[in-house]
Every structure is written in structure tokens, then in C-alpha cells.
Length: 469
Ligand SMILES: *Cc1c(COP(=O)(O)O)cnc(C)c1O
Image 1: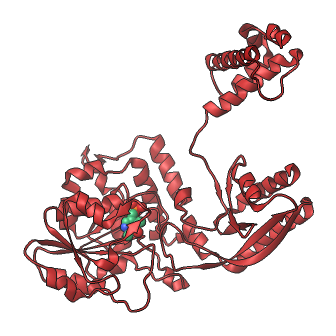
Image 2: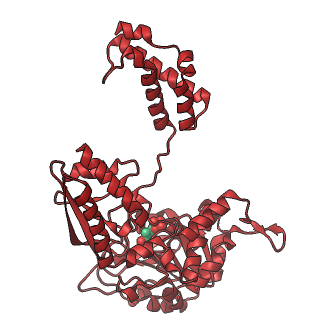
Image 3: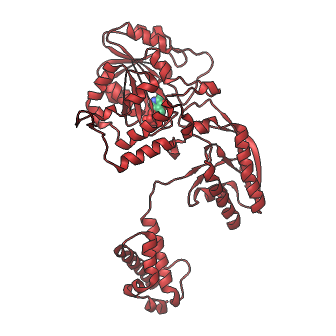
């Protein structure tokens, strides 16, 4: 060890080694940064050799340069890397909240890139040559696809609810059914957000039954709003009743000072009921049934960026746009670009461009064939896997349509001696992480959420695992 200590090359010597320049170039870092990493690697090795605490294999004195350069290269990879990275979603859950919910369409992604790279008219009126409003972007498209008089966009739907309650319900009473006091994703509770906003929550009805008359009984001169909240992430069955959109719209319209607001949660723009999927209301229908305001997420069923979309009557939207919180909750140009791109796909009838829609509408037979392709690949190229293609269900995810189960076929994989947890971890820690499901000690891959060009990568990752194992 003393011998090795004496042989540690000087920093200068390592810098002269052609492999240093290569490493710096490969890692796309400066000479100074590369030198710093080499200094760290040398200091680290020296410290451990002196104390005799080095863990793992030590190099021979002839390989020291190579060894230190490798240490520096690994350090560069760790230090100069993103924490936010692409993953392959083979779970079959389409709007997976942990995996970034919706993937953007090509139209949306291209528009984001163009706007991000260039100056743009975010707050500039090109006709008048004067300052313009960022609110006008996306508004025209939202009006087109929802039939609403006016619209605006904020950071997410939670922000939309907060803005509406703060601007129109503060110090006044807002009536909500006890059956709709929902909690979404652990941190968004209607009752808490109401309290934060300064609006007084007036609960009516019971958990399973609320009628329009229950709302009517509670309306007084201090009532500002009837609020209906989409249950989104749960269903109630059996002896149930709720007040319909039309009824509440009519009730509110009979009182000058009362508005009707519906928090739709997901906000569907394209009717999936025609494909036998779920019973989500269309935004357009809720507007035409007379809701004064609706709000919904950009990255749930809409399949766009994280955003909260508010649509409805112009006189209320105007109040919201002028409220102090509108500035606090406003969205960036890239969000607006992504939303415009997504909405344009809808407007042109190109829903199929939107990845969430493609995934929702994929047929079980098609998924069966795709699963079989990878099963054949494993059969031909790997020796330790056994596979089975079997019927299963995919989820929509994102707290959306919890009752909907989409028929799919999954590829179930077992390995001769690696258990499902080990396989799952192997895929999850691949260079591009692959997220799979485990069920009863079988690894399941659902190709509903996988792009065709991602399949060879999954196959290679399994091939590598087979050889390591
Ligand atoms: C998801 C959801 C929200 C929150 O929307 P985010 O865009 O995630 O902030 C609010 N209300 C309902 C009914 C929802 O389903």
C-alpha cells in the first residue's frame, strides 16, 4: 500500500495523459472541471490508502492513471446529470401521476420548442404594436373547443379552484354537497382549500344523497356560489342521488348574486363514452347546460401540460383575470404553448396525435400482438425467462375514471432464479428506467403506455438482465 501511495501520479502527469482530454471531451466539461475531479479522485485515494480504508479492488501501480481517470469520469457522470429524466412507462396506467401524467403530443412539443427558443408575442399585441395580455393565448382555442364565452389558464386545477373561491367566494357562503367534499392526491381537499380562500363552506345533503332542494334551502343574501365537485377518484354506488348540472344552473340563475361553478377535475373534450369508456361529462355539455364557470386540469384526460383551465361567462372570467392572485398563479409561455398545441389537435379532430388518447383507445387484440412480439424475442434470445401473454386490465390513472378498467394483454415474465422484485429493480435501474408492475411474483409489462420505438429498448434491457442474472 505504501508502494502504491508513492506511485500516485501528479495531477500534471494525469493531465498529460491523452485519456484526460478524451474524458473531458466525452463528458462535455471544461479542463478546470476535469482537473478538479482528478484532484478529488487523487485526494480520496490518498486518504483511504493512508488509513487503510479503501473498499473494493485496488489497481496495480501501472494502472493508476487509468484508475483515477475512471474515478473522475464516474464522478463527472454523477455530478453533471439531470435528476428529471425520461422513463419508459410499461405499467399500462395512462395518466400516471408519479410519471408526469400526460405525455405531450408532437404538435404541442414542437410548439413549446419554437416558443422557448425564440422571442414571441407573449405580452405583445402585434396588431396595435402595444403591450398585450398573456391571457389571450389559449383563450380563443379554449372557447372554440368548449363553447364558453371566455377562458383563462392558471398553474393547475387546484390553483383554479383557489382563485375562483378567493375572487368570488371570500367572506361569503359557498354551498357544496357532503357527497362531494373530496380529497385528491393526498394534498388537495375541497374543505381545506375553501378555508384557505376565506370562503365559508356550507355543507348540504348527506354522503350518498343530495338534491337541488337541499341547496335551495341554504341560499340566503350572503350566498355567493353553488359549487359542484366532480368525484374523480372514487365512485359511490347504490342508494344515491345528486343534483344535476342543469338543476343547479337553473337554481343559481334564479338568484342575482349566486353563481354556479363546477370543478370538473379531468375535463373531457372528446367524448370517450362513444367508445364505451367511462361516463365523464364533456366540458362543452356542462357549459351548454348553463354552468357559469367550470375548471379542469390540463394534464389529466385533456392530455396536455400541467395547467388549470377556467372557462365560462365573460363577466366572471374578467373578475378572475384582474384579481391579484391571477398574477401569482399565472403560467409560463411554455405551458401556454403546450396547451395551444394540444387544443389545436382537438380542434382539428386530430385527437389521435395526443398520446393519452392513443393509449386509451388501443384495442386489446392489438396489445396482445405487441406483447407476443416481445415474448418471441425473449424465447429466441434469452435462456432463463419463461413468459406468458395473458388478459389483464389497464387503469386510466391520475385520479380519473377509477371505475374504468381497460381490457389489455400483459406480458408476464418469470426468470429461473431472479424473483419478480429483482427483475423489476433491474428494469427500473436501466439506463432509461423502465417501470413495470408486479403481481403475485410475476413481472408484468403492459404495452398500452409504451411507444413502438421503445420496445427494442425494453427487449435489450431484458436481454442484458438475462445475461447478468
Ligand atoms: C385532479 C383534481 C383537482 C386538482 O387538479 P390538479 O390539476 O392536479 O391541480 C381538483 N379537483 C378535482 C375534482 C380533481 O379531480
